[in-house]
Length: 98
Image (tube, rainbow, N blue to C red; front, side, top):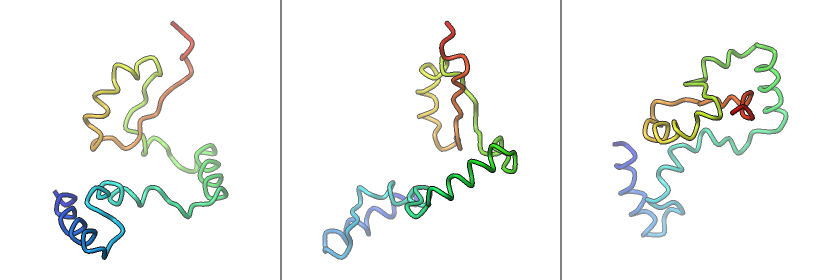
């Protein structure tokens, strides 16, 4: 609901040329904090090393682990329920198995 309320003022400010952002960009702006434009490769490497070493428990970030072969059937449900999903991990280990 909140993002709907943001559309009107953004649209008005954009129409008045007081904002570069228009109503169509509300969803982008809403999720922008996760895009981390200022993150450096070193930051990424540090986080990945901590995940590999077990210093960060990745299971707290996972909503679900899916086998690659199951992904096509589950994809529509994942899209429909995206507000309940944190991160879906795709297991490629048996991708070549029939």
